[in-house]
Amino acid sequence: MVDFFLTLAPWQQALLGTGFTYFMTALGAALVFFFKNIKKEVLNLMLGFASGVMVAASFWSLLEPAIEQAAENGSIPWLVASVGFGAGGVFLYIADKLMPHIHFGPKHEEEGIHTHLKRTILLVFSITLHNIPEGLAVGVAFGAANEMISPEAGILAAISVALGIGIQNFPEGAAVSIPLRQEGLSRTKAFLYGQASGLVEPIAGVLGAILVSKVTAILPYALGFAAGAMIYVVVEELIPEAQQNASSKRHFAVFGFMLGFMIMMILDVALG
Image 1: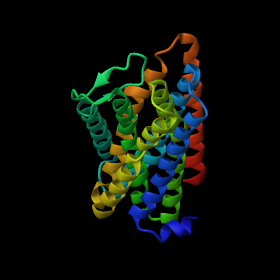
Image 2: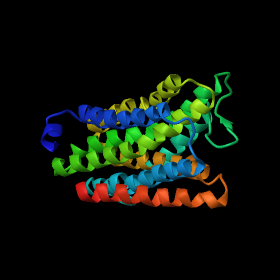
Image 3: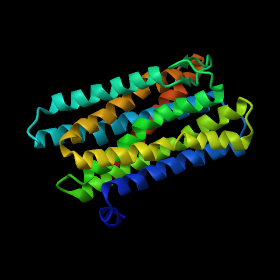
């Protein structure tokens, strides 16, 4: 598999990787054809799992390589990683305030510019916003792999990022489509909207891979940027949503987080 990836351009590698993450989103969204409701404890577990994967990927697959790459470039490692990390958080904050969307919490709070779009569309926009940094992380990881001394090791590390994000996209897809079904949409429409939330990942992934391939000097900044954007999503939305239910249900989110973190850590260490 690694030899095959090495024959491809970075943007093609990113397209394959994010194509897999999109497929997993669509596969999870397809659960709406079998279930109409989703228990709160299961949703908490899903949100916690996604958070754990994203936090682990942010360090092992993004921040650590950013620090190493900055050191190789002769830059101040902690400064470069911090600038990129902070920029990623600021970018998601601005997007959060501008892009109209609704949180998946029980209050369905609206954020972003006021709009008259249907609530179902705003719910999809919420997850779409989450998927931008995920796709960017995969794309930047593949772009970085081709700039490493050992591209083979870099490709394995990038594949681990795609696998980890793809695994957490499966329950995330269900977390979109099933609530949409509860909103009154047909199963088919709920599935279509749910899978559509993952379409932004290939776009962000390809753009990220092209950018770091053409301008290699920004590579460590881009890695930190993707990490900061993902951490922003976890802290600002995923974890709070998982903790909004009764205290007796909150431990599901904790166990989900730990499971997701361990799986991503194992993937990255074993493959990277």
